[in-house]
Image (cartoon, rainbow, N blue to C red; front, side, top):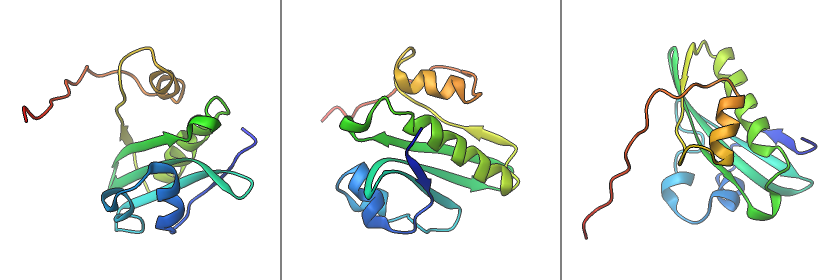
Length: 126
């Protein structure tokens, strides 16, 4: 991608992509967490996070602004998170996405992940 990938500690820039709500911005810079942004010039285009604990890590929060989709941001962010995890000693990564066959699912497979099992999503009855 021609987008620039950076690892910010700026919760506001991260939240500019992922949307409103302190629950996602509140862990920027927290122990074990690494956050990444893909930039189009001075505008954040896509975001992703990595939580690492020893040899294990979770790759998540993959969000791209609608007008930036199809530019390789999530593939580049996946690669950056995996590389950062490996530098920390991570040997096993896990992630999840929506239904099989969508763009996120294809990006994850291209990054080297294999499907372990389909996970049901539960919704509150209220």
